[in-house]
Length: 317
Length: 156
Image (cartoon, rainbow over all chains, first blue to last red; front, side, top):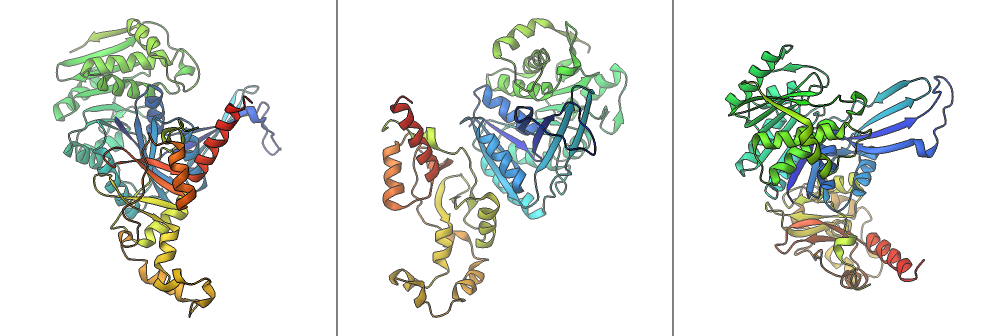
């Protein structure tokens, strides 16, 4: 196995296309317009990696009927994805999206998600320590369920570092702020979909992003990626700071899955022996390649290679 | 048929327990994950045993039970329940089948069918050359694979 993907709060994504969706009425969904897919950022990264032929172990918590459905959906991905979850009593999250293409509405119903007991979290930590020794790299991505501390990314990273593993994070500010008090990963990619907050402060100007990125490098990360105005990224290493931009207009409605593709392609590039700025360039090119079409499917390797020519890497510091 | 290997039939799932975990927690796991047994591993992920529902039931019955033809000879019908409660906090390693019978991804359908039919295993841990857990093989997956292969053989 090459990668251990951690998804502490996986989900079952359910998508219903109901044209003319009406409240207070019976709405029938044709079978072909009712889709069910495994979700959660760490799950998405594991699925993408296995599609790029990288043998991956996926771990985290699953529970209840929804959890069992999620695991059985993951079985369909193929032999390169091995699951190793800690089972809990509470139900795994279910994210329901009702899309109405006639009225142009999107109605979302997300379950609150499970509560993880201290005992289950400790069982997970023990299993993580055994699994991490069997891989080259670890990726921890996405939200944490209730009961799991925001510092969990740091706890897992300090275990992974004991065995000399390369660690990638993609998370939001609350998790990163608490976790870096315990340990720093090699690569941090900020999840800024809901808030442009970094280390507790809201950023606006380019200079603020540059200094925040430099701060992370100063404190121990080897590579930091801060998304800026959705389609740009500020990337920092010990050698400097760069701004990544696409050379063409990005279709914003095709952004779904781009962030997870970014992380997966960086891991892929790292496993192929690339380092620092090069892995960020490859990740960004993969994310840009993903925005050329609708859906969560990752782009083909040749499309990523072609897209490397369609991105601009400009040194800002 | 002989060329079908375990790699094509196995479930790529590494649900496992450590031998110091309690009987109670393992019963809870089997219930939550709807499986009938689980590999027991060491800190290197090497399979050192296997614990199934059968092993737990056996641990709650008197040692002479296997010699009896019927459960009607048990002196007390509550014996099973009281024994289960007694062992619930014990480490599972005490009751696991050791060493576990394991298979490798390169083993053939014929080999595993023999283990399943003759020895009655419901789940077999799949390990690499070092004995490290890779997944499990269930009876149902063997049956399903065999059935699919037949369809191909008959050209249907």
